[in-house]
Image 1 (tube, rainbow, N blue to C red):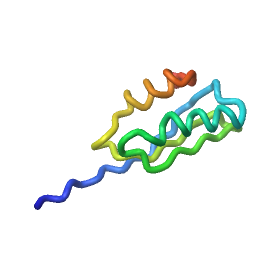
Image 2: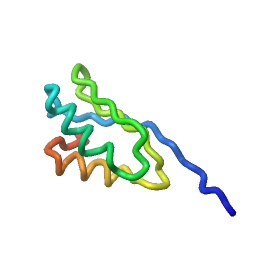
Image 3: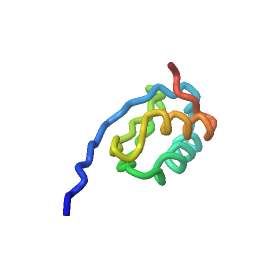
Length: 76
């Protein structure tokens, strides 16, 4: 039986609209249930979201779409 290799990636996104603890919780609740997400950390000081995820299960596009749907678009 072949084992599927995980392709873990750490990604840091600029999310200018995060400004409070409520934002941190909303971002966490939006991203943490996604398949392949191992860790979500929002830094209010730098207005960034760091996501550790399995790139074999989840794409950057999906992460950006979920953040946008939650009201926190990623700065390009």
